[in-house]
Image (cartoon, rainbow, N blue to C red; front, side):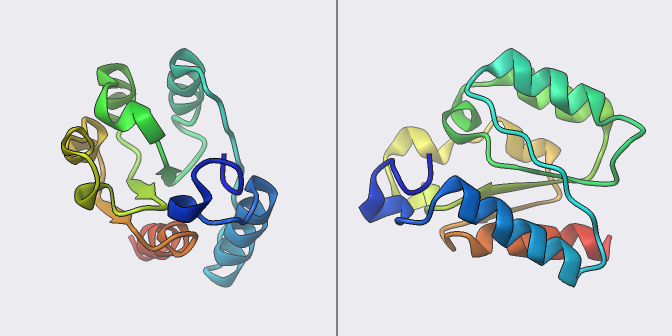
Length: 129
């Protein structure tokens, strides 16, 4: 919920602004991008699995599921698509539980604490692979 949730930590820009930012970052790297957002773990697993054979990379901000979801980890490992983990905030400098990332072991890189630029950095990394 960019622009709504904890504005002091996550900023005031909206989800629509994030999508436009990512679209431009993808274009600047000669890539195309599709977007998907859900608050439901199973839906995220489904969309990851449906990416198999269709996409060359995944940029994911698993939000709170970062610290809890073995299912998302398993889905990422199953599809074996290069994945960048992103977070608007520096999760490692926040609460202790946020230092645990189940998805990280399935990702080629993690970008956290750079706001929207975390997404740009992940797009650039995946475009170079």
